[in-house]
Length: 53
Image 1: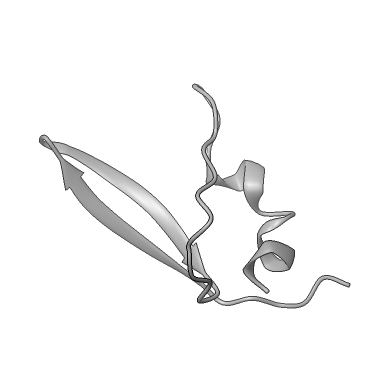
Image 2: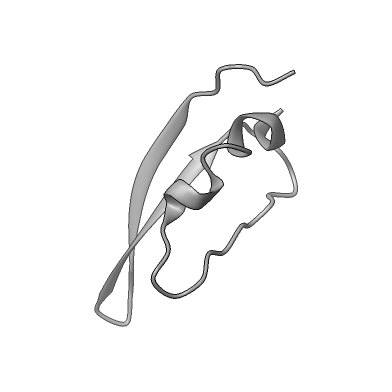
């Protein structure tokens, strides 16, 4: 069952490159999802609520 999850958009500077990332849930250790070139965080939006639990 997929539940509604609050996400937070954040940014970090990596050698002058502004990187956007999304956090959800409070899992420890964190699970990091990476998308491919030409893709975006939207690729993970369908599964993020379930993984955040």
